[in-house]
Length: 366
Length: 133
Image (cartoon, rainbow over all chains, first blue to last red):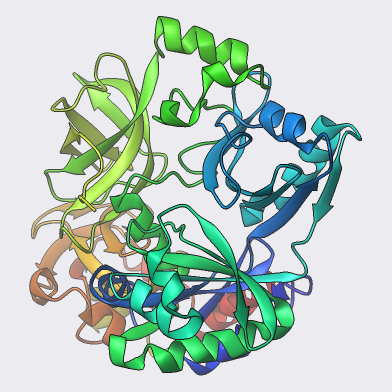
């Protein structure tokens, strides 16, 4: 295909095409944006179980005697002194407090962490890690060796136990374990980006197709089906999970984004701490909020948010919530208009202004 | 990607069908509906509204994106496709017939001549394919 010579295929590309996946270039890979329909795929994950190819995500390993101090220094959450086998969601910040990326740190041992980073930030993150580690520990980019399959939905634990054995059922949320899949060692983590039960499986490329097929076959009686990036986006939005590049970036801080729970001030010094302490003590001038649209229209990234004809913020993500049947979204809004219950107007391309209301997240209880 | 020969087109992916004298029907092309994916709601002008060439006259929302509809020519809205209020997804299944958006009484017939022919539009799609893969 012209103009896309350097767009890569995941191991599962041919399976997606065969399943009717509409393939689009995303973060350097051909990814399925949808199969049958975004709304149906969304519902499948909320009521049954869905499979996501997220092989475009990056995988990095920190290893060495001094890796602990490196990972504690670059992250805001406490990824260091948790028990091995624990997964921790954390932002990685610039000295300004702006977010380099958000990611999950998996603590393998006191000297090793396995990290999953956003596809679109992979190279930037790796360079940042190398610079921050400054030779104190090994930093390895394993992205080209791993595929990743997310299994999400109320039936996901049952499906995972059919493939990996009953021990998969007893795993607590945000933990991980090495599992055997037909002679290949994979990492099964009880993490995800949908709010549903289930997990994410890091699998060496050579076994990715076999694992996908096995999950598809074993999941047939559980209602399994492939899910595209479109439903992945609407699922995470209902839970107010941030999408890097939309809701957070290097100009927004964890405190502004409602991620203060991921900032552990008592763990020692870390990059960005000074600014984040100030924002904790003085408050932020704006907050990332969840809103529901009460008029007719769908809010989208970039639309201005108004109160009394004055712009007080902008929409960062918006969609029609397939579960709720109403338009919902996230926006940065200046104080004091960020308070739940505040009535706001969203300017839709200058064509009309629709009424919306700030609400307490998440939109769905899970 | 279907591009009916007897329709005219815009670079913003609207189609125009000439009905009689100075009345035209407009809609969005097969390419546009395919790019949008599942359409979930629409917002169209009212009968009697005046529209101006190149200005937005409506909005089409799909599950994943929203796009403005631009008036291909200036004129007055004669009719709006009421069917779409109940079933906007018909734009996906039949963009050139049942999925039409509005009928317009054209103010200046010369504006129709300035629209793209089917061949011009297909050439444009070819270029977009090259850019977007």
